Image (cartoon, rainbow, N blue to C red; front, top):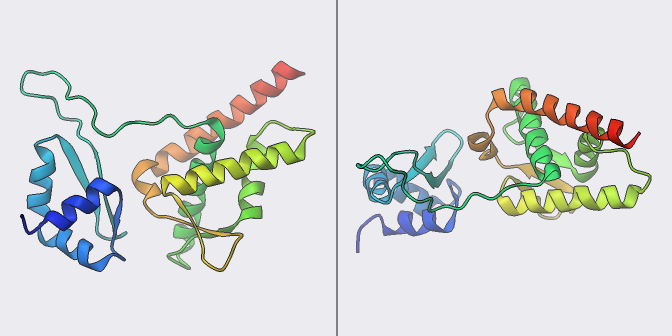
Length: 190
């Protein structure tokens, strides 16, 4: 068995964080071997040492004959509300990082709901809208971008891995599109 087998197995299961010390140190020690191993498939090993996470993604490389290699890691389309929540969480992370006060970005569930409401269609059914937002929160938590804090039912921490999937440049541009989309929806129903 290869010395870097723990890192390979952990990456195949999902995101590896630096809080999992043994696996993290194994990954860093054998980084070039791990990258070479997955490069043959082809998968790219993305490691952010400063933020403390690593994950696999499909490589953009072409095969020797110029054709695309089949995607190994499936892409899943996200609903409007889940995409919106991811963008808003990334925006919040950008804001807290620029203030430099803390490395953790923590939000209460009520804050998340209030962040999303301006981008959602006005509804006379407040409970239905809240259910939609809660479903988005659950999905984003399942995707690993949000983590419910222990002993605090209504508090969530934004996992910094969201930075790898949503760039800072994309946030403002896309939020403007969401605002325009919402306005067009309202005009259609008016």
